[in-house]
Amino acid sequence: MNRTITSTATPLFVITLKEQHSKRYKTSDEKQNITSSQSSVTLPPLVIYPTASPFVYVSSATIESYNDDDDNMLHPKSLFTQTKAPPSFEKSHFRYISPTEFNYELPNLPIPEVAFLGRSNVGKSSLLNALTTKNLAKTSKTPGRTQQVNYFGLFPHSYSSSSSSSKQSPTNKNSSSSMNDALGCIIDLPGYGYAHAPDEIVTKWQERTQDFLQQRISLGNMQRVYILLDARRGLTPFDSSIMGWLDEAECDYTAVLTKCDAVSKAMIVRFANEICMRYHVQRLAGGDGGGGHQSPCVHVTSSRKHQGILDLMWAIDADFLNGCDILRQLHLHRM
Image 1 (cartoon, rainbow, N blue to C red):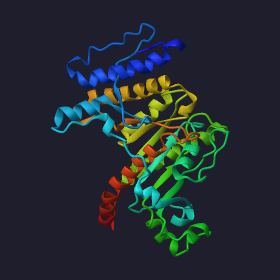
Image 2 (cartoon, helix red, strand yellow):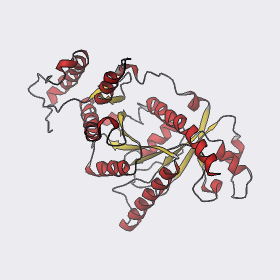
Image 3 (cartoon, rainbow, N blue to C red):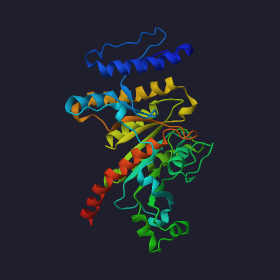
Image 4 (cartoon, one colour):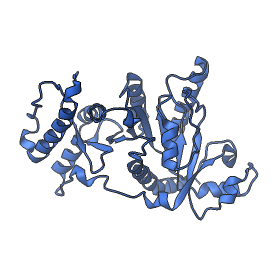
């Protein structure tokens, strides 16, 4: 599994990946026997395909399994072809939802949620600001600034902006209705790992985060957790343990590489391949039904250069749409 990439071989590494993908996709009988001809590069088996977007990779196991089971062939280049933001994002806006709007209790409403979770200093706040096109999340050079759960709701433009800008109290009659208008919520979770805070405080953050996720999963609101991974470091053992916990909690999650403008293309492909290798192991362990809840896609982002943001918007839009009808049915059943 270990490999060495010399500085002179970096361009060849990328070319070799493209050549292998071309051969693997066109000659399925020989896909297990393809090896790199470059002696300066040692590669593990390639388990990813590039999509139409240069900022999303997809597991080859998913593509090949789909093509084996169905009459219609799925080509990876047919994925993530969008060039504009999804309509739900274009016709709506994000705003911070104060805890006063749900009386300092977690909302019990049929609104789909996705959460962003990552190691402290992974660039979570900057990514959220790029997604929401607003400076809603506070950024800082000090790791661990986010110490509580923050809700950012997606509201149609027809929603009155005056009520969102005014200070609302638990007795405000418009609070409940405004929350109901949300198409979905992005949740900013406290970071894990290193932070400039006492150990006991960090432990409490992480315990509260775990309890929060378990509750939202049990209610059906949590559609997906986007776990952010620093592209300068790749998949760490701590990240893997968080993914393992999400598997046990039966929560779908997607890996997102951040700060990708700070590393080479070769490193991005290397880390994306390692992440998808974990997905392959899950599929082998679980058979056709899959052995975990990891997404077959890996997103590549740079908040500073606004790269990969559009693809991430479409992924979140799909989570909101898929969760909306089911949640409303569950909510009516509980009433």
